[in-house]
Length: 96
Image (cartoon, rainbow, N blue to C red; front, side, top):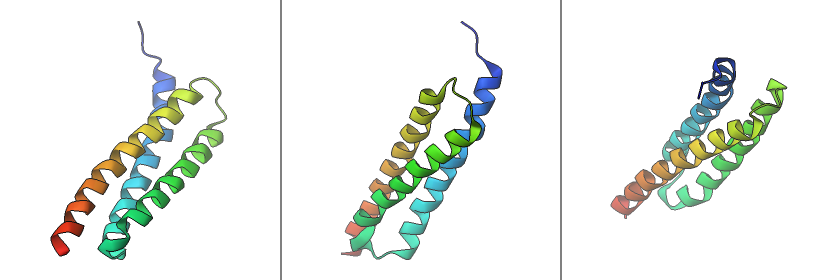
């Protein structure tokens, strides 16, 4: 089994920026919203990450590996937001 280097480079260039965007969105939710509204804004960040994923993937104009790149991008976004939700949930519990 070999690794397709150009495909891997394309995946990194189109997936990691979405992860960074989602992480920034989670941090902004933590700083800009009251703890009672964390659960409202995290799904909105995921929706934005989903839109950013499709924009980034369609901008590459590369059909090969599209599903894998979308899956990696959205899967990573869900993991990032899951961790952020756990941390924000603990913060919300400690403030009450």
